[in-house]
Length: 149
Image (cartoon, rainbow, N blue to C red; front, side):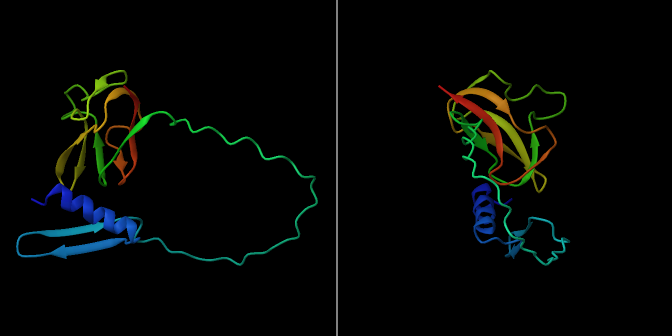
């Protein structure tokens, strides 16, 4: 079984270098990672520039405040499928309002048929779950907002 730290590093390498596919193998392990839409066809269209309309200058609107501001974020460390419980009949690992510590398991992310426990790595109270059970998640995607304690 591949070490989760190795898998995280490979995914990070893919994201940093904008790779869409990575295949590695040695005597013991084989890893094939793909991200994005491999069958996507990019087309370009001519860009037409028109003269700018004469509109009176308007002061820019105040920047919208970030709704996540002030909250700690628990992100997905990998690409996979998000689950809030160990099985459909079990209670969720955490619910909104639950206190958590850095070693609290908050969810599972299934990748390549391996269920990986995701720990909070922060202390506080669960404020909001941003993902639905069974939903596909990306590397770095926000999963939970946590009110720091």
